[in-house]
Length: 90
Image (cartoon, rainbow, N blue to C red; front, side):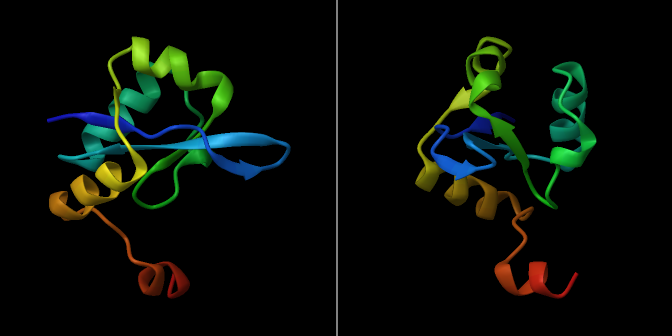
């Protein structure tokens, strides 16, 4: 069981963003996010979008830093991944 975070490299709103996921359950992910004061509005179906300013704090709090590719592989492996097709259908 792990909370995973990739490098802040996704630009939006004048800053860079990371993705925060669980390789086990959404309950685990939401609990970690609450414990680290991430707003619920940053949740996007299978991950939280995390601003670069929060990256070091989340890693220090227990998130495992992994590459973007590793994060996606483990998210898919968990069965929690929401595909682009599923996102369009929401």
